[in-house]
Image (spheres, rainbow, N blue to C red):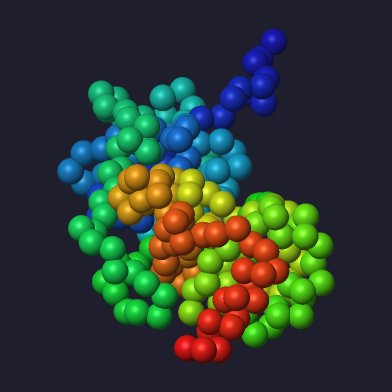
Length: 247
């Protein structure tokens, strides 16, 4: 009886010109992928069927995708192989093969143009909110009616004309919610374009873990020192309001 090929686990390969290496950051966090190459070509293997159909992969320029069968590489839907499987390649996990580099200084603040650009993109994953950034002028009345036990779970700091509240559950006030990732506060519904970038940025800009990095959707951030946060209470909020009026 002939073998039922449908029971075979498909093995997918991909081929990319060497000059497309800089675009691989979009799949760098797919740690099941293995990478190898020579002076002209980068080879990738280990994809799941879901990954092989993902837009992150097919956005890579000049990418060729194959299914490996019996040592031959077939283009999708092809009955005739395109080439033989490469041998004697030195395979390395993609997240180890692609090195990340970072700028020597941090000047990437809200509203200030800078050479450094870290991209955030919309995420479909739902994350629990841990912080809220609100306009002070919009929350005066709302703070006054919140029960004391809710305020006691929150720390806060003033940033210009805004207030940053950190704690859970989030206060029921108008504002923008943020979620926590490796010490970064990211806007709800967004994540780093390269998801595993967060740890490297933390080591670069917050080595002593003594501050929070608050990001906006454009890829700019502010640092808030832990010592700048204080316990939220109605009296501390009112004192802050008065001191702002005096100034």
